[in-house]
Image (cartoon, rainbow, N blue to C red):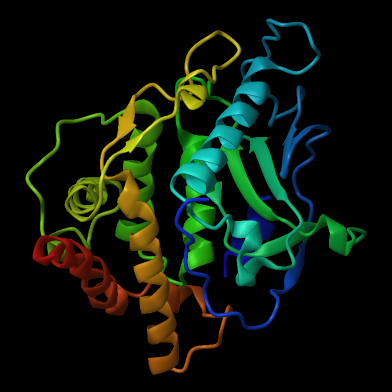
Length: 306
């Protein structure tokens, strides 16, 4: 499970709720990274340091409030992304999902990541042998070398936690492809929309599958137009957190995740898998590509037929 990796690396419409089983387990992992500073905003605890190998590369503090701008910008993007996902797309936040009943917050570790922008973990953990149950949390890691007023990695990694809450599937083309497309909700599309590919043609890819999810969403749902209050949110330097006026296909995100939740539940029952404890290798298995494809392609077909 992802806890092993973590230990080593240290409204309007009412959405459907997944079937409730038992509360999740909280794993204790070794504290291998020393991050001696923290900014807490709502459920997010952003941990960082100014010295050593994990020190922030950019320590500018333009507003002289004692917190580096990059850390405040991470908090701003995370809170805005959460509000978009929860309040505008009407998704269930991960901390409200049955799988994550033991989690009391989201730890965000800003540290050296050796060439990658971020990681998210699908298990509830607490760091260090002396940690209490109130310390149990979900975890995101972000690199210490980027400026997050110009990069949507915090929103990307947070969306993974939403995905984990809805379904047991961890296929790369689903997780990374959909999350890369979700980035366009904040920064806009980076390339022109390609012709809609078939689901089977993208199952061997990861980020490149973003075009499939974008095309599917635009077939299955309408565009999200941002309220003025969201467009007014800015980073420390005045740049807008949301650089676009609308998110094409955004209103399909909830129905896609709910369809994948139902497909995941059906696969668990069919294959007699343990609820909330499916082995990592099984979650990533290509044998579930057909389950995912059938679930989401039916949404576009149903809308056309309606």
